Length: 405
Image (cartoon, rainbow, N blue to C red; front, side):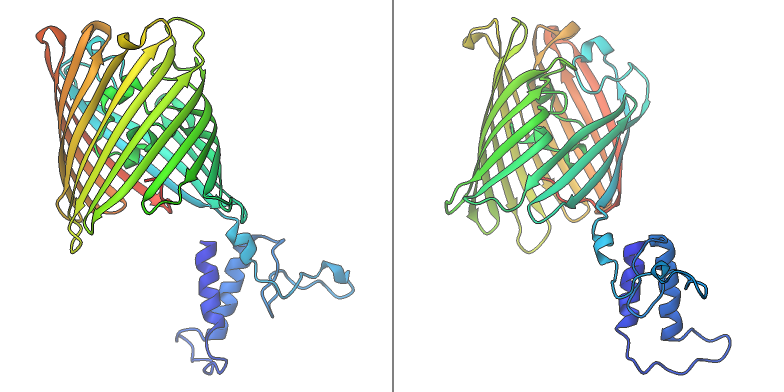
């Protein structure tokens, strides 16, 4: 509101000096009257300590004989105070879910549905604050609200002016491991993340307090190397954290005007102290985007594979899994896709492999609202077959800056 009022006032100040005469009663106010009205509203928004506008008094003039220092300062437009206000956004994700699988056949998973019941879900409310702190760093804070409580999803500073292609990110961050695990919920194409990523990397990716140093290589194509050191809780460990070193190399090559290829390799090593703790995690990801330069239509082919080793295992005994998906953006509003997921089966469903085929249809009437429908066919070990469907809605309020691609 303050920013809008300030822009309106600046527009009024830019009006020609030769304002028309005061119109008769009932007519629109003159430019001078509109300017004074805007000054009064801005003064109310900014409070009693704000600086005055040029030629204006935001606070009442002191009474005769009062201390002259009590008069408000003149000559400074409070743009600086307005620039300190960060971009603020709220992203709301809700859904309806149904499955014919028992809860013990679904775990471990980020979302466990009751059997044979249509369940309303408020999956997440994300509150984002983003702003440039000074010419050297910017700050991003993302809070999430869910039925489990409030959590700091990410909160970090990012450098803006380091030499030699370097950039440092520090705070609570998602680890630079893989592609899907670094995305926030509202960036997901499908309603839920692949189960292979959840069980072999983390419920919503790998992350925690620490720092990430990125180096953009001086090459004709995009090539970036990440080295991170964090305290992470891999898988579904919850509060059990392990000191973790992460490395990732990602490259994007423009094959043609309408084709882009991305390839990434990731590795994480953990300071395991018990036999059942994680020791090593490897990953590889592929991203291919084919678009029509004359429209908003495009195809995206994407896939990732993961391999995990526990402290008590030799390298050949580790578990592996992955997914592959194809998404067709039909036009500005519609997108459809399909995903195959190959994940290790655990809990009552295991041991063995769980395979999931998921179809996707999404409709976005605008950039700030979308609905999705994702039915899934689930094949568990020992010939058990299940069905799950998620219908999701999502909307955004406020200004939300871009996330990493």
